[in-house]
Image (tube, rainbow, N blue to C red; front, side):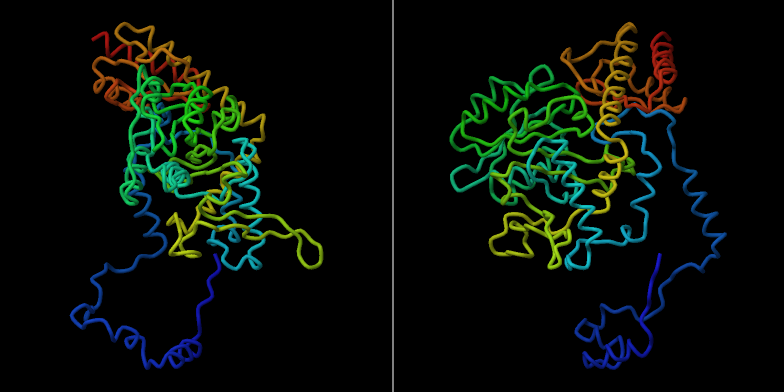
Length: 437
């Protein structure tokens, strides 16, 4: 990666320009007791070989599972080599938000392509350049919906707990009210939602598929919400959109979600990206950057930052969002993944993930003592009962398998296209062996 340092002459010129004799003068307003008057107590420097050995030794302490059967918001999908290669190019890897748009045509085009693909995936008219993660996207979507008369946000209890907590934090910060719609049999309780919808409700958020892997009755939910005059927000797993109806087809006003499944490694929880898309009607309420395509003075194709209506660095006093950045590198990664996979590839990833999850569910529930907690249709996650859960999960771990996530209702399992039949059969065999003891 290139790095061009300033010369001594240039540094002298900069100090002279601000009226400073030395760099220490730059800190003359800082109390002396706050300044370090000694050298930092750092270890001796290492050679490159020593540094590699040290980092390798640290990395070897990590437990790397060959089979991952846990999801809950972060998913182990196969990432084609090109998806890692393109974003690693120096031109993209060093890029930040393109404030000087005319100098950032390549970055702007990459964002424009990402936005276009998200719109195709969700069925919406316009997408922003991404936000920090899926939970943030949900919270920002809720903020889009509120007005002076409608200040209450409803969210399904079957949504991801982290998403619920993030939306709660945003509501607390703005003094708005969040109400949780109860779940029934692993899905949103329709009767409870009907009772809670009134003239104060700005929006309702549902996750599809939800935290328990269940498919919600998204069409009916949308009809109920719109009948009450509120806006309908759907949080989506982008891989599932290779098979199921788009949020637009379900009547959603805003589609959001976690983009990690689109070519981003699990990475100990990040960095990820949150995608957001909406209809043209609500375009001006969308936070973050929106890149558009136009022509320059010579009639050639060019890209511009078209809309930043809600951003606090543009309209600090009137801003309804504190988002002033984007996950451009992660969004580029997602765009490369979608381009590499294409519609057929994405559909196949979704099909295999769903098929293997159902195969695993059948294998596990064939074991005495294990049952599906929720009987409804599911995508690639499901919840089962599991006697001796800790013993079972420990035995799986010893065999290089990361089992499901223990939750209050049981164990939440997940399978993606990376889980082969042999690994799933081995998982079931280990579970059966432990329970037979």
